[in-house]
Structure formats: structure tokens, C-alpha cells
Length: 518
Image (cartoon, rainbow, N blue to C red; front, side):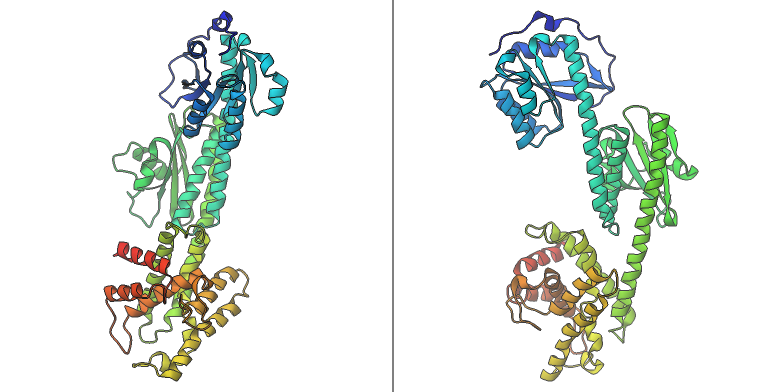
């Protein structure tokens, strides 16, 4: 227990503040083993608010209890920390654990001691990551008020910087894969974080990004991303017909301009092909003219980013259409039907990889770029069949030994064509995956396949995935020499071939995926 409490600590009470709006309070943790210290601290900090938010005072009577609270609540803004508790240096040890074990460098730590000689100020400030050092005898109410408010101001700035960093990280991650709808939502979510950081409104400011396209019904307003009280809307994806924001959003879309009307600010963004976005913002405090001007400039940047996304989609779509058309030429009798099947197969492979990424053991192997590339690469895995004589390829009966050997050449030939195409600038990564899928998709997990008799993980993951879909589509499709199998027959065959022809872990995931799809 420490001595040294002074009656002066209770003088100069801070004046009462007006009632703040109903917002999440700033969390202040008091870590001290003397109950009286908690009482006088609560008395000194009563009725204080900062930027319209009250203080929530949390008590811990030991360093271990304080560490447990910090472990569970990462949003503690200020820690008022005693030095001597369970041990003479319990507070100092706690500082080290918070910074090193929890990795929390944002919480402002104010060290308070009743025995300054036991923990010399200069030594403590140099050796420990604390933000202030006070003797309890010098902490009058006014000085404690000043210390807490200055700590909150520093915490708020650091938190804004952290939100800005997270927003940039998310935008950079999303910008590398803007051709997938999930990445568009990631991109939008990152933009909301950027606006939060730009205005320093904190994550309690509520923002909603609404999307409308000429391709959709006029009343269909899609939610791309949302925070705060609107966060639940991002899970239902559509703005309900009776939602309070709908009228203002429709006004913005109709007038095609930003509308600022406290307490709501709405920002209008138009991009290629009449796609429109509305940012619906309810900041904690009214925006200044400078902040509104900054937001409008920021929206111009956002518009360019969404234009890039649209252009990327067009290029990706054109590429997919060209590759699908090429592959459909292999079916001379029904090219239109083959084209539709190819597009359906591409989507199925992409959906399976999205599903597979959620399964244990595959998270690190399947990233967004892998999913982007494998769908269109799958369309090319049988490209080598175009080099096989049509009499063999379309023979209405089982192939003899020589014909089978000739047909097997399609794997090597297809790979060679794709490797040659890989030299085209910008096509290297995509064509590399397509080439390995073409060469290895007939290899068996046990090494009994062709053309190189490799096995297990030596077969590229993309080719092991291709093998499953290739066999499934072959079995369930009409062939000149047999009728198509049912889904059940094809899946039973694949299940029986797990560990022999197919990767057993992939097969298990494939069967689960097909069951969900059914």
C-alpha cells in the first residue's frame, strides 16, 4: 500500500459540463491497489466530457487484473497506473506487458506514484514507454483534468492515424483485385475508413455507401459498405424501402449533387456506364466548410478509382469472352452450347476456390489472385485437343491403344501452346497457371497418371483442382460413345477415386461444395 494522498487532490473541481450526446464513452482504466485513490479519481473526473463523449471509469486493484482488462478491451484510451501494487515494480512490469505482449502502443499510460524516490522519474521515462509521470501529491483535480484531456487528445490522434493506416492497407489490398465483387466491397470499406480518418470522427461516426446502376431497377439501392448504426445494412446488401436514409439518398441521385444538411452529409459519385454511389454520413459533430470541401475533393479521387474498377471489369470480361469462344470451337457440332457450358464451368471453379479458401489447410495457398486466374485458366486446360485429329477427338466409340496415345498428347501440346503465349507482355502469370493446368491435369495423386507420372503435392494445386472438375464435367456430359452420367453417379465415382486418382483432401472439399451447390 502507498501513502501520500493529499487533501489538495480534491480541490479545484472541474466545472460541470453540459450533457453530451448519446455516444460511446472514452474508457479510462484506474489501476491502483488503494480503494481511496479510485474514489477520489472518480470524484475528480465526474461530469467531464471530451468531444461530446463522457468518460467511463474502469477500476483494477492489481497489475494482473489491469492486464486482464486490457487484454479483453483494446479500446482503453488512458491508463492511470500506480507503480507499487502486488510488488514494488508491478506497475512498471505492466507497462512492458501492455506494450510488448499486447502490442498496444496507442493507449496513453500515465504513471502515478506516492513514493517518487522508489521509481525515479528520469529513469522511468527513459526506460519505459509511458506518456506522463506524476506524483500523487501534485495531482490536483485541475491537473488531473488537464492530464486526462491531453492524453485523450493524443489517443484520438493516434487512433485516427491507425484507422488511416488500416484504411490504406485495405485499399491497397483491394486495388490489386478489383475485378471481384468482394474486392469492391473491401475497397468501399477501406474508403469509409479513410473518411473516418480524414474527419477524425472515429469509428462511431456512421457511414453508408449506397450503389445504383442503370442495369438495376430504379428502386434497387445496393449497400456496398457501412459502419456504426448502419453496419447491419451491409449484411442485407439492400437499402430497405422504409429506411430513413432512402428519401435523402434518392434526392441526391435525382439532383446528382452533394447535399449537406446537418446532422447528415451525403456525397454523390458518378462513374462509368451511369453507375452511381452515394456516401451517407452522420458525423459526431457538424462538418466545417473546410472538411466538406476536403470530402468533395476526396470524392473526385474515389470516382477515378471506381472508373478504374469498371475498366478493369470490361477488360476481364472481354478476355473471358475471347477465351471461352476459342474453347467452344473444339465442339464443332454445338459451339453455342459449348460456350455456355464453358462459362458455367469457369464460375463453378471460381466458386469452389472461394469455398476452398475457407477450409483448414488451404487458406495460405489460395489468395485473391489465385481465384482470379484459375477460372479463365481452366477454360484453356484442354486447349491441346484442338491439335488432335477430329476423327480421334469425335470418334463415336472407344479409342484403340494408338488413338489413346495420340489423345494423351493433348496435355503436352496444350502446355506448349500456352508456354509460347506466355511470352506476350502482361500474360505471363495467367498463362503460367494455364500451362501447368494443361500439362498436369491428367496426373493421378498416386503417380499412375500421365504425362510425367508425378504424385501427391508434386502436382500443382491448380491442376489437382482441374482434375476434379474435368472428370466431373466429362462424366456428366453427352459423349458420342455414351450417355451422360447422373450427378450422383459422377460424385460416387470421384469419391471412390480419392487417394488414387484425386487428392483426398481436395476431394472431400469438392464433395462438400457440390452438396451445398445442389
